[in-house]
Length: 372
Ligand code: SAH
Image (cartoon, rainbow, N blue to C red):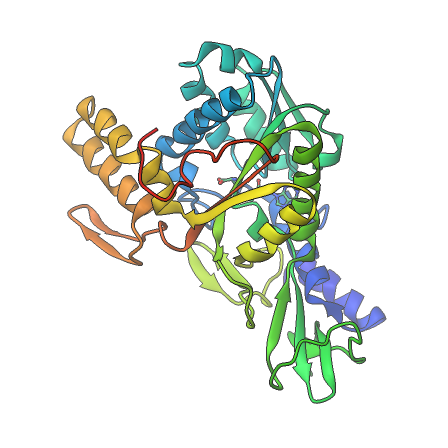
């Protein structure tokens, strides 16, 4: 039994069932035993792989996207480049390399990484220390110095804890995690109805609310509205708010039970992009999209970038670049290539733009495809 299983069981035994939100917070972020605190979860050896880990093209295109935005912002002398949840620092490294092409933009960059995992902050430091750009680490957005900013978040919001509500006969109740007769974790409705939730629904329906994500988004929107700049949020999720829950666990690149072995698997929820966009708008910012990751990257010229890389590559490298391209943009769940089967991330993943009012529509969100 994992240390965290023992600990959560003790909490439930003394305090009673805990909310799904608290369970997820403990599983991922417990200061000693939390999933992100104890390991580097990314890559082939880990539990999951992300777009920047699949190809350098991802971070490079976001770098060029940002350079264009910086120009539209009036080329501020200092730009806070903020990344939320930077993982192993791969995206930002590819970003910075591509940004060198636009000298004055690169010179303006002051990098701030928001990260709660000491293990991953260490990996980021090791990767970036020779890149010659100032980098500062933070545990939250609130300590990042003021000023015009570009904020990037890839697969960050899916890692923030969600709340669940379940429709009982007499109204909504928060969905809790309790113990079954053998001491295993089970979902249970809370003891008292939630008087503030009145959405009509059939008995048994579940509502998933990412309250922490909405708070972070509101802080981003307020910052951009007051100090200028834009944000790019990429994650997997849905375009409309609807009933149902999406809590999932990944371990060794396979789905696992989120209630088993907390702290040993990555637990995430799909991002509700409609709710994020509403939170950004309510805090005074404008939003663009969401569009699918496939559309977004194609409009930024990912095919042209892949072709350029292939011209300098060996046949084996070319096959890898092609497979990476297909993974990043394809909307098909499974694509069969000569090199094997790959999963398309282009449709499930979405890109959402957020900006101060007055900034023009950033690249990638226009109706018609247009290369960068
Ligand atoms: N963006 C990276 C990593 C995604 S994994 C990539 O695309 O490869 C999620 C990242 O968010 C990890 O770096 C994790 O440590 C970080 N993270 C999770 N919860 C966080 C929180 N509450 N505050 C800051 N960072 C967090």
